[in-house]
Image 1 (cartoon, one colour):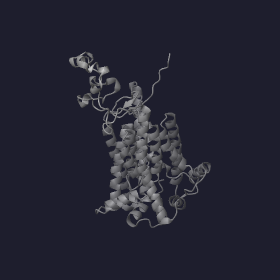
Image 2 (cartoon, one colour):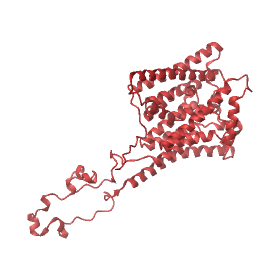
Image 3 (tube, helix red, strand yellow):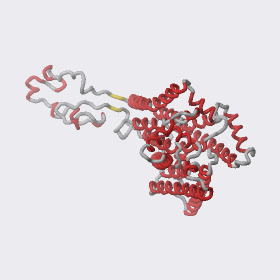
Image 4 (cartoon, rainbow, N blue to C red):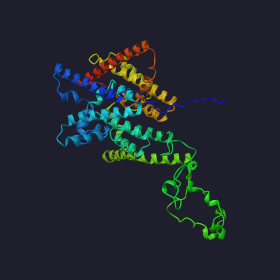
Length: 463
């Protein structure tokens, strides 16, 4: 007897009552928590809003928006976000508050896309991520996540034109757009397809056939082969000898030359052509890959611009290597450097540095686990999206900014959402324990989130 197998859906979206409301409430709570931390830091240290919100990379974005690429290392930052800031500030909005407002809106859009991809729990977990503060300040995390998550959602829905446009927007924000493009290419090649408009995957797809003479368009052969209308077959009256048949026209299958139809004219309508599922899928994949040329050309345009500006095709990587310790390093050497920084006491004035490096190590472990789980679930595109970033981070002098990159790893939050959405149909006692654990986890996530916001608002290194 043949074994029965069950193939799970690509994304088992959890069913949660009032899921949208839960996402909105979490968005509001996390934003208010970060605002509360900012107010507390301002009152206790006397730091201004500009001092708290315009730290670190924000200054680079503001300088590029105002003056263009002047400093040598500024070309390490992609031009999309500075251009948006400059455009909004041209309407009289201060650049700082324009960036904060856009980040808030984009974080809501990213959460909405995650809600579509993995359900409300996935979106809630993303909003509670430790580095959430970077989705509220003028960094690229929020706008990139909004564009990338929605690009993925549209690609999963087969809307490759919209997905390519959103991916092109993401490619103007940061180099992660290159990894997004590669993952979308793998998604286009591996995604299971079904004939559009069919609603089921039959043995073959058929192109529309021309209407039969004397019949309406509804009965002209546009259905599936096993549902052809009566107009495409000889009727019962047609096979009976009629007066015209007795007078010499003959039976329908023995028509005289004057009763035969004229051969079809070249051009429209086209003849009925059978298209099997392989041919249909091949056409759809080719169309998807053609659309993905749009973000590819976006990245190529920036490379050409940097070449015209500096005369070096490798200008972006050179700026990264000279401005930050991101030169190529063997992975085992990078791991050793990061471990030494995480356990070192060489910086007594900055005790938080070792904790941030420990978090970098933990984030890398999370990335490796997510990649392996996606591979086991045969989610090749999602595995490539996370895995290539883990590989890139492992080749720097040490693990740097991985904590922020976790915000981009939507497969992580989809997997968490799938895991947490199951297993609630249990006894009341076990359900109470789960609710208690969920409450404790929520409180712990809020505490870490606030601590990370405190690091950023006080000017300390926060990855």
